[in-house]
Length: 128
Image (cartoon, rainbow, N blue to C red; front, side):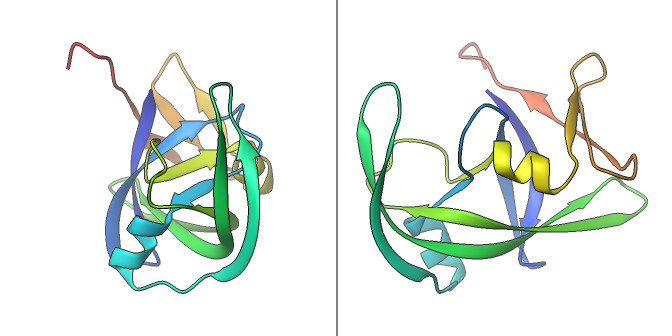
């Protein structure tokens, strides 16, 4: 799993999983509830390889990054998944990558945004 440090809505430090092949970007209801962020109700579902999960709404979030010298903020729509979602609290999926011109520099372990803003990412393994 690949993750990056970020800030949600300019105040809440978090970590996001980078998942370029995901068809949606997701945030857990529990996570946005802890941050006091409201979402737009919408009952629907998403399918994964293992199961189908209910979604309860959508929310527009500002995700900020700091490369040690400068700050970059992005905005995108996220699907709000139920509190029983077994996945990570925040997933930056394919739509987020496309909307923000983001790519992964695997050789240098960096998330690159449209203007060559580079944020280091970490690969988590079960051994850690």
